[in-house]
Image (cartoon, rainbow, N blue to C red; front, top):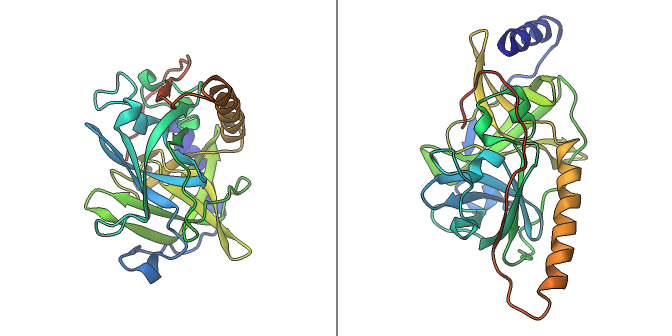
Length: 274
């Protein structure tokens, strides 16, 4: 039923909407090419591989929740095994930080298979052990929800291009269903958590993060959660956690804490994780 509904929506959109021509991937190998994108980094996870993450505050990285579960998909990874390499190009990051804690949206259930409901909450925040305050690394601002037909873009690390980010300047938001954005952006394994952005007043603003790949009526598409509902809630939760942690450990060294997801269950089919 979920697959049929997505296919119907996609067919209706392609029949009635006009979309921009998507551009190819541009690998950002030089400092000039990568300028302005230094807040995007590779998220290395011991025993798991890597994803992509984006700095949205000096000590806060936004990524996909499924990146923070082990390869077997059974348990959350150890927070000590997470490292964020901001602006990584050809072995040289602009900054490196380990994680102090992380928060997975409490409505995300990793054990629930690939469902639309699960994709909707495939969002996580990683608290870094130290803020990144380098002047050349400016945290991304988060945009309001983009509408269908909006020109967007994606910057990502992925399989076969893990040493430098690749930018797709233009792709399209084809539509949305149940809090999940449907896009024609070019993603691959490793691109999970990559920032989806649009330009506002000439500046890129973060719209979502890549969650999954799918094929709809013979066309490859990418899927991402609409951040309008889950992200403000998570930011408030992080703020509360940080306030309590500060009060509890004011005079003691900070220890790593792992914040696990809560409970949620749905049924359904689908999708491949990048």
